[in-house]
Length: 275
Image 1: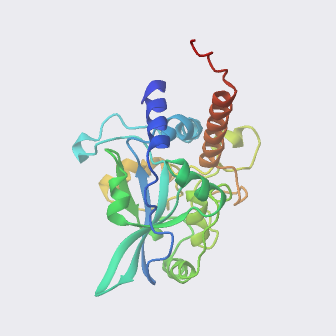
Image 2: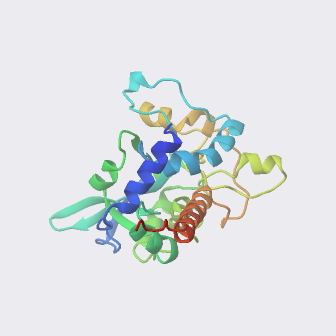
Image 3: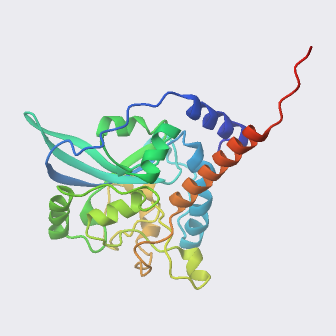
């Protein structure tokens, strides 16, 4: 886990960097297939390590979804749990089809964060570009029918829904909520076990707690990365669909930190010039 100094260095680097060309904000073609929900852990995402993981880890421990000590037999580079999800899709392209990821993004620079946060966070990212964001972490795609309440008919319905789906601000909808909306508002991720202990039926959107079918048989690599045995025993979600989001809390906290730092810089008294 990076130190506070590492986090600050990366944050400053991101703010100083010129704005990168954002992944496609427009649907690149007609959606012809949904390969599944794609999970990702970005090995260099300091904001996730400092702002999202603390929210997730309490839920994970209570739910029994604990990190594995080693995945060397599977040649997995990192064992941290997912902090991001999107939809792994096939869209029409000249001469055939191509793979893209429809995802709700927060961003890494102010030029990306403000539009995503306040206007529209939905992006249609080429799969190769999505994979590059692993940064030593990992990604894995899980078929739609591996989730509870999703059968072949529901998966087909999602294809039609994705032809006309529009983006929403990240403050209104994070990555998990987008995936659930694409599947007709079906609950695909667990309610917060911690908040349940407090008597609150509100789910924190945790990409690491997908509601897999109890009889699902994933391939070994995906099953290990997602801790599938523990996920099969999670209770069905009952909280409100429009629920508190760990990612949204992290986004708001980030903006508060930036606003505080900017305000302090403006108010900082200047040293008198030497005569």
